[in-house]
Image (cartoon, rainbow, N blue to C red; front, side, top):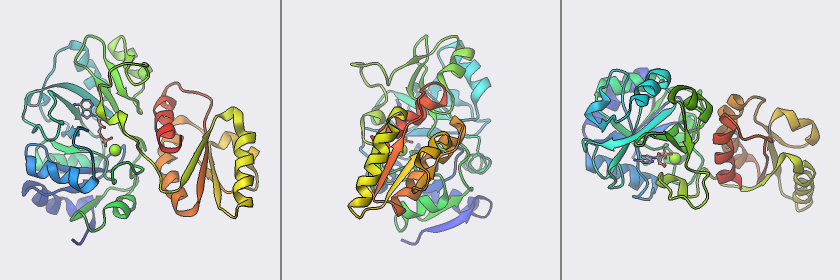
Length: 328
Ligand code: AMP
Ligand code: MG
């Protein structure tokens, strides 16, 4: 199969045609690129799992446009949900609610809940509006590999496997959406992201975190799999262990290998003169750069030696979740 890359503006009609006839298309969003299918078409949805090599028990997120009535898809049980929608949608927040069954069971791994998101990316909105259907999509990478934040990244993983990639430029967010279970009285973060616990609390009055409770039943099946891994070797050090990261770097060079240190700008001076993948200064910058630098690193390096940031509040919770899974 020939994989075409078209700008969103030029490719939207073709994408619509493919999607409405049961095919799959890669689309930009503000978080990462997604691999989309008509969520009401089981045969189309199965193609996503086949192409990615994704385990069938890992459900997909349904993406809808701004004016789509989500009451068609899910049961909105609590008042705080409307406040969250008003505050954060469209944007990088995904809400898990009881499904009404419009999106097929293949997309939700046979479960009774559906995850719904309204992406803010202009091109993605235009596509969703054109098809006026819930498009289910996971990230547009091969299963377990680092998520793509550009059309080129998608092409590297899926060339020859899908007919079309819509190029909407570099994703502005850089890590996947916050997945929030809103089936209970208090919302619960299943996957951390750019909409933080603090932001949710300020709107909904409370917010729990599911991923971090030891021994808890995993509610979001995706979190149990190895994820986001670059193709090279990796190591992860705490910010207090820069000397150990340095020692590993030196040992790798002695073996004739090419190491790269991946760290924030704040600790870069500790690795002066070494190969660096710099992530930036703020949490937003680090999220924006993380996957891009991992994918740059896997091309150049035998090993990426990552150094963490010394904090796990706000956006850093989502960043550290990705960093541990990709490099830990
Ligand atoms: P991906 O876009 O590949 O990161 O996959 C979407 C992620 O959303 C999955 O890995 C799940 O963790 C989460 N998700 C999707 N649907 C549900 C659902 N119904 N219940 C809980 N988590 C979900
Ligand atoms: Mg993914």
